[in-house]
Image (cartoon, rainbow, N blue to C red; front, side, top):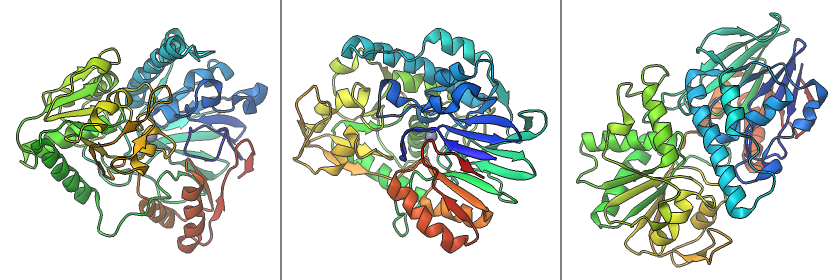
Length: 451
Ligand SMILES: [Zn+2]
């Protein structure tokens, strides 16, 4: 039994792994690197060699897990791809959007080799996706290797996958949250008899301050938003289109209903966010979540802004711009609107999740009021005069939550993936204290690990 990390570096980046068991080669996710572009954004599929893979499982529809799926399929045409119904609905939207983004990049930046794949490829491929139910046992090859999807509580449809082969149980966490969010329920992961655990480590470098819980962060966020609106300024909330936007809509709706947020305010969301929200509403009752009947697209008055309108969109007072991307990547809505918000002393910028320190949002968050920040190398730096606040409303489990899971599972082997090196390092130091029998493995890119 073997595991190979097919990503190009040991960092949060993208996800793509090969599991070989009982003579079957299974690909786990095929993500696109959020900061790289062109071929460097893709996993190193050359490591698959001529044999490609026999089957693939997709944990969820975030770009860093699904973004290179069409490229992966060129390595193994016709191989079955397994995912939940929600992941299929959301991946379809995300991959078509990705083609549109790459076409725009080709036009605007004269970028070579784009798009990496086409709308037609996505269409053909998505018709063949195999939809699985949580808890269903799948045969991935002659009965020798089975798989079962388990609710991961991260975004709609997200799953961990439990494999059984050669009398052993291997569990791949994908991205996970053990705590309830506003919309998502906490993960329901297996804990018994797991021999090998392959676990994400995104928040390994973020200690949870004493006394901080999801609820205290929500309350602090709502109080700050209320005062920002009362002061009359516009509010920029850079959020991911998939997951964070829907959580935020549910949070704002709930807060308004119970009086924790008062007075009316304008609300803008991006075009992709609106599409993802529509899929989320269509899947009501079909995937685990809280507020099962709530139609997010109708729960608050909101307007939709697209890439063509954002540059000329008037910035209004008492208005929330909940637009992507969460890391304010160049050419996204939040990056394009940001200068007009940042230079306005009445305005407010609020971050609710993780930003890569090397992203425009990361650079902005590292500075202080009055500092200049470079949001896009093609434009002049912007001086921040607005207020800026940060909140931890992450869709990922806290590092303490992940460590506690390892403690309950006591796996024989633990493979740490999807984390920058300080994050992975924290787990490598802490796991032996709670699970002393566990062999901790940091799978280097391209080097097969014998399990
Ligand atoms: Zn994710």
